[in-house]
Length: 634
Image 1 (tube, rainbow, N blue to C red):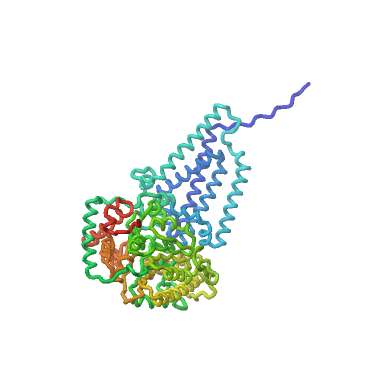
Image 2: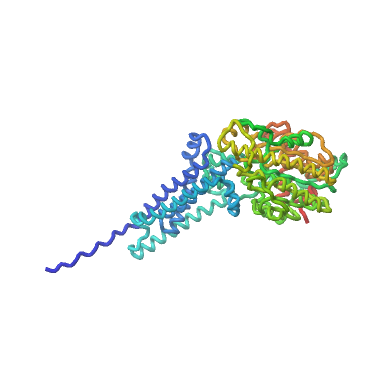
């Protein structure tokens, strides 16, 4: 009897329906896990409260939906479930680590505008210790390896996606389903790009939550609405809402009011800055650590600056952030426009606003129109905060940076050019110019990282470990700045050149642990020293906590020089509200006040400032030439 060998049984072909159900279920579970990782990256304190407000609320569900849609797009494109999950897992891990690091350094979460820093990988790596980078790289490598192995070994054993064994009609149906899923997911995700537009469905979904948007504090805003909800809230939008009363007639009335105010002020002023060098010095991370509780330094790192503040117009500046916000303080100083009067989503005017215009009103154009040559000096590269484009819009004549400075000395093991070299560059520019200069210097010496930067860190007690090392090195860096500043001002005084200097720290460094932060008020952790100095003589004048938007009118007040109507407006505002940041208004006596509780005249001035800021920034500039003639350099 003849027997034919049995033919191998064809592999069972899973149904398209089972395949889709499995894929959707697997991806949904993966989306929950990935979203959980993102939410944990923003967890600081108060875990039970955070858990109840987020993981048990609609915001967490909305975050999951966004992540799931992204994962579905990847699956649709790659045709692999495990592989797509691994790829998205790597991205989520990197974002979560970046968010955690930024929270530790700057006490603020990751924003959409932070993607600009991807063009500066060298700078980003200096912000993080090598150990963290190595660990993160190992974890990423581990995720990639695990993804590849699981995808190769398990992807086929799981119910495959649209296998070859399907008949042609079913394969076409499966392909159609795949295209439809990708198309629907992409369309839904595209709507997140207009998150801040009126009637946006995604925003309406997040607003089902009882937690209102916390626009005054983005850390709590991200916690209340989830990482993705907070991130989307900070997507690009118009810099300001149009004031209800904004019109040409309104602005002309406002301009007439402050032209009259400027005339009143100028009638009693006899000075001038037209033949005087004007130098603005934003000193990176310059602060007074002796004002903080929780630790003690063995010596005062800034005795000379303290003495200078005792003989000049000086005080403390309200910084926008802890550990960051340099460009924002520079923006406020040069424009007189307050970050606190823009929408909260405008986290960086340099990146999100100024670069959208060919020219932008600032002190650069104003001083140029009065005979000054405007020069920017920054002992670092030109890419940070898009400064090269911003300075062009402001109208700077030249931009001197790390590779064009005459000297670039470092102190001990510090990574950054010293303040002494930066000040020497200012002196060099003044000495070789026949015309008065307007110089804007942004230093770098005291930028993080500062671990083991100096051979002789100042001894610290009350804290230990890495924090003590960082604080001690930071304090030594301040001492170097303190000495360099005193020498710089002495050189200017002896040069015979008439010069005024506005010196201010932009923020405290992000080196303090939760113990030090907890021992000090939020306000104390935001206050930095500032002073206004003149080579022609100075008088002691203690000033209240002040925002940088008031440095220009203060400078003209100290110089007894005539002001344009715009400075008259800022000066009137300063005498009623001396410091402004998002969600915080301080009166000259240091009290925090709700704008609604201000007296009628203060409300009027604040509204005038809001109108003028809108007109000069994104409005029609109806009265810019009247209020601040020459602010746009021709």
